[in-house]
Length: 85
Image (cartoon, rainbow, N blue to C red; front, side, top):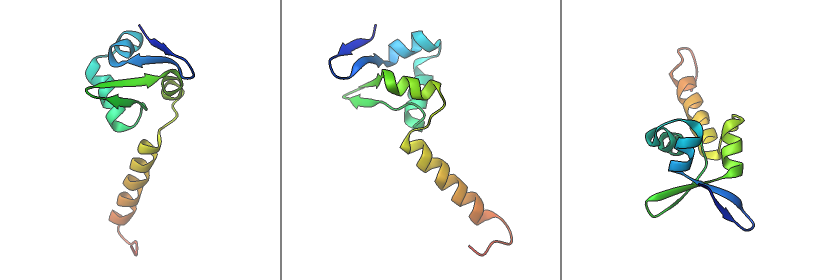
């Protein structure tokens, strides 16, 4: 069950998202580590805001994911034959 925090709104745990999205805890944590789902870690627990969940479901990426995609693109460009990089 999500926690309601004044000024932030609903905050979800990994378990909440497992049940809501019908995926495993490992999948939720993978999305978080990959930057696809923005969250905040406190100790061993990760918490996700309602707006972060909405962004994830709408396909919006976090800054972490954007940077990774940008680095991957640079790496691919450097490996292309005939480039002067």
